[in-house]
Image 1 (cartoon, rainbow over the protein chains, first blue to last red):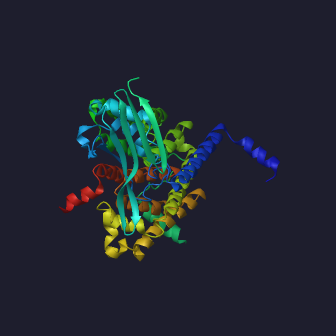
Image 2 (cartoon, rainbow over the protein chains, first blue to last red):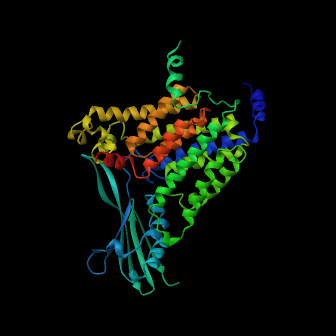
Amino acid sequence: MSSGNYLASLKKLSGKHYVIISLLTVHTSWIVYHMNLVSQDLINPWKLGGYGMYTKPSNRASLRLYDIRSKTEKISRKTYTSKGFRSANYRYSFRCRPISEASLLIFLKDNPHLENVDLRFTIKEREFRRDPIRTKLINHSVTEIRWQQKDSFRYSGKVCGNEYTGIVDYKS
Amino acid sequence: MTFQAAIAPKITDFFWPSGVATTQDSNGKFVRLALMTAMMSVVFEKSTKLAKYNFDQGYEPLIMLAGMAATLPFVLFEKYSRIAILLFALLLAPTVYTNWATLANHSWLAVWAIPVALLFSKFWDDPLYANYLRITLGVVMLAAFAQKVLAGTYWDGSYIAYLSYYGSPTERMFQFLCTDATLQVPCGWHRFIGIFIMGWQFLVGILLLAGVRSLLFLFVEISFLLGAGLYADEMNFQVLNIALLCIAFRVGMSYRLFSICVVLLVVDLHGIGEFVEHVFR
């Protein structure tokens, strides 16, 4: 097709054609980008619209909470709520995203009885293994908060080999 | 007479009305029924999520879902079809906005497919909408294939072996093909099933993109989707795919296929595995 004919055929396309072509382009581009993120283990393949479900067992990421004031003690799930924390961390779909400061604040607002308690937030994931074939529960990320004074705490954590830290003025 | 000419009309008569809808004729009601079925699969998927919802946080999700369900019958009427889709999309939008990071792929496909019908005054008559769905489904099939290649768990059969021992009751249906040793090194049958699934998804993706609209192909693909849904104990996504394929092929959905889809969606509310266990108990 000569460039003239090509341009003529493009002119025949309606606005709807351009919208449809744009939607297909955006959708396909996102899928390719999604695969790139999955290949680096940065996201959960089951989520975010990349059609990677049923490629491996769902990682079922979930929170375990520990009191680390003196010795490490697991806190029963029945004694706290983590819905807001989970939502603020996008239900752990972005696997290598550090636990956000905002989500820690939400957690403490939702669970005021845990204010001034040094805590460890561990995100557990099921990992697919082939030696033999099974899933194994692993600690995927760990974040600790330690209260410095009554109104501020220091947090530090590690996920995907990257460390992060910060200080939060809680009452403000 | 070719094989397809001899066989295809007979086996596909069960699923489709004898007058196959095209863009020119008046079988638009079957295409509208297909879109309504696609929307219904979204409603059923949301209702399973709502079963775990804590209503102390408000009744908005329930009201939204009831609103979405209420729009469904109106999709069938030529006069109200477009407004019903608009209302459905508006009621779906808040869920997509608030839960975008955790939305199931089923919902994402619905988002890419259903609201686009609003662009057309008569989506059931417009080949552009059918072609859009055909290409979208082709891309989705190739994406599913590529994700499986990337994971490497189908080439070696490890995922099928895993499901055969640790999956839901229906996912364990291929356990009998191999011994426990498949968990050390996946056996030939589990590898074959994994490679077959990948090969089929690749082939379907290519045929859809190439514009193949043979009824035999559609019949085989729908059968495959139903089989896959039974295996994975997850029918919502399969019903959505089937309904969208019926539009993409411009044949619409017969009342018989619609009835099958409704039954599957209802059974899926509790899970096919649970249903089968209950029957055998």
